[in-house]
Image (tube, rainbow, N blue to C red; front, side, top):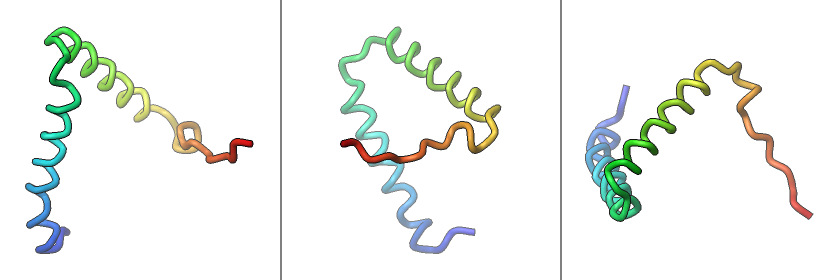
Amino acid sequence: MMTEKGKELTPIIYNSINQSNALLTNEFSDLELATFSSVMNRLMLRIKTLPAPDYIVKPHKIK
């Protein structure tokens, strides 16, 4: 269940995401956008098939 504040913020967050996506992808061709979308969808499908510990990245300190 979402709080009232959360409900108020939801369209603002979606708008911000849409603006960011437009800014970051404005020079991509339609083919590049379609390819990117396809790859991201395939990654999500793959992630959903993995048991949780296999795709959790464990942080480590770089020397």
